Image 1 (tube, helix red, strand yellow):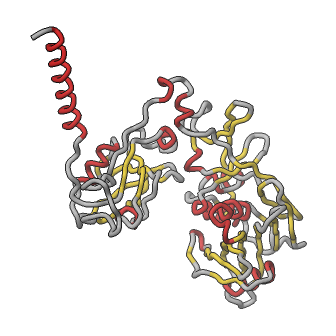
Image 2 (image 1 turned 90 degrees about the horizontal axis):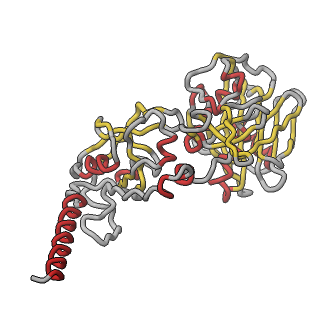
Image 3 (image 1 turned 90 degrees about the vertical axis):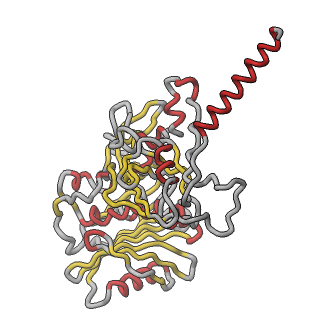
Length: 398
């Protein structure tokens, strides 16, 4: 055999060997049950916002609609710390554990709670199905969506010094807020908003956007024997000139109640209120129904920043462990909390929080997404100014 023949035989042998190795390493066992989950290795951003997971964890990359995972409420971006009590160290391990489950078997996932910076004591359970939902078509059998682990992207720019920032996405740019006040009422709202109304006894504070239908309100008063829901409906009708239809009340921490509402003018919003000793205090956000996805968090955060020295307002109370730094005032962080601080636990539903800098500028951000574990000045929230990152402090300054 000539030199060319020997070279050809070596090349073919190497190709066959590489193919066999790739097949043995990459081929996964056939799934026994269907979850609708896809896992991925933790992105740099996910790693930065899960400080207690020093090693391991897997990020949920996709959740199929109407699947067991979808029905259980799992969402893309959540971080799985354990499955059935087994600590997760890699996305491949998470995939393998789910793929090994059989139809009808229940598995339990422990998720990292980004808003609180800890692993949730509450776990999410789901029961595996035998097959994907009816109507779903796949090009392979079994479908690749069964706990698939996507291949990680290559390291950017050969691990250059700025690679991690690029992989983490755009620099955090929290929304600047402006202070608004009248009498002994104050709050924060996006730039361009104005005070629309204020009661001399500080029982009403109303701010609104300069353009468009966006309103944030605080109201307190005596019920005089009326039901709280009747008081709320009358207040909304008097304010917006249209009868309001309220959803069933939902109980919230510290005795608060939340209700969404809508009216015939196309307005939509929510009301958060608490009744004590015949007195009601409420915070309301209203916006166009078609803009609810982006307007509800923004307008709601403006409403929940409002505080007034209103008649018969309760004296400040000691801080409760449930109150997060990004949802309360500096006074509350130091231990003396007003009723607004307790109402602002609803910010966890809106997934927003307040931060400020040493100059007193206020900003709005998403605490779970915008926390930097590896910031230049240590873990925290940052804001870019002129190419430099300024560390921000949690809490409202009013």
